Image (cartoon, rainbow, N blue to C red; front, side, top):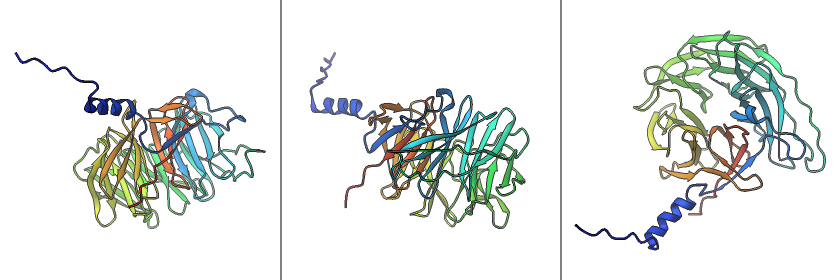
Length: 367
């Protein structure tokens, strides 16, 4: 019998593996900051069991609006430029336990929430930019406007706004509907089996996953709904775990399937891919920043942050989210992401005592 050689823990190869395990588990690129859902030193955070952030949107001037899920749903605004640096709990919504969509519309913020009575749509006014939150501050909480109960008793799966911000388009397990934000009028567009999230492309068309491995497309200007408008390639599309991300610089819409495959969607070229595959399944949130890179989170339980570079077609596993500046915290589960005014990525922590995470990607080396 051959004698088994002793493993040398001091060899360069062993040290490299050890270093990768020890230092490669958590964030290996860029910087993450976990910000509590409060104005530090001036307000209390959203309660632990009401603070799972499940929806985000952002205004052109960089204000982040979000909604939470849990024992009670809350709505909040975050400001992180100028002399700001805070999250303000704007309202808790009686009878709502889940926020599935936030839409920064034409002249109001719209939230789609669910509760025991089904789905409903509420709206509230935008918050102005404060003068100076270091020296002085003052806020007033907005009055919630009950806009609509779209389909009696049915939970809303997701929603997005039209390009002009005048309507929201929503989906349930059975129907596609619109809500006119000026009147609250609900229009049921069609019966369809709703699956997961919907989105708006660069041309203003609304897209969602349809039956028979395809995407449906809705044109809000003409009111035309095109079923099975774009064929989907072979992939995992049945569970509704897909996510979307829009890159305006490349005029590209990204789509992930249930198994974390990454695809691009174009009006003329259709769906291409898979371009790559995220490290874990499913993809839970993703957003494309100004330089064209796609950043996202993936995995169930203890998730990972990843990046996709469309130039090289490569995916990088950036590790488990970890915040080391001021608030020292690990981040395991996320549900949504948006890109900030200056190229940072905001991630919605879908966990008890949820935080709004700011990710500052590493600046790419000059070539």
